[in-house]
Image (cartoon, rainbow, N blue to C red; front, side):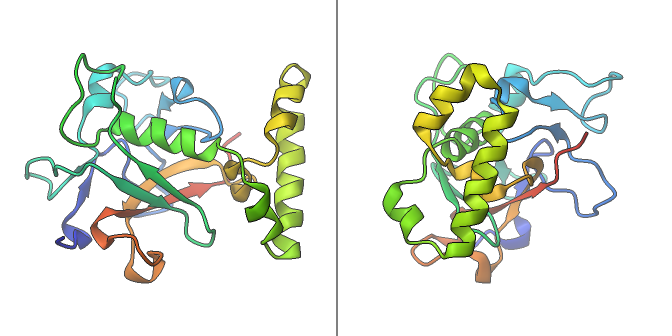
Length: 204
């Protein structure tokens, strides 16, 4: 496969801003369902933002360049630099944003697939294989999440245990994605399918 590198143009709703002073296009705690995503002022012409539309969700997630046709990618690997997290994203078989599946990954595929991957439970074998300090950080993040998600969800969350989103701790504010750098890509993952997810502390 051809490396995408800097020629890959990520959809404006997903792209990580080049400068920290620029707010992200999506206002989203990745622990929350994508139905709760709001658009930031940069992405929305209306004050107060708006919700994502089906047209937003059906947009190609990545183009070869700003004027190029959509890349016919059927898979992305979303990585989180500094963590062992990798979330594989595939096109939805029954997308809510179109009557039929599309022949490329869409914005909707990325946000729904990312959320689903982060909400999956960490297997006990994986947890036991982590360094002691990492296990403790995950446990603390898990306990904070239990408290935030309220007593009505306590039993269900407790039964699922530590989820993959707990690797992020409080860095759950979605900033965007960008093509991964070569040193960030885990072995076995094609370079042109690897994109880094950038997050930040939740905005209050």
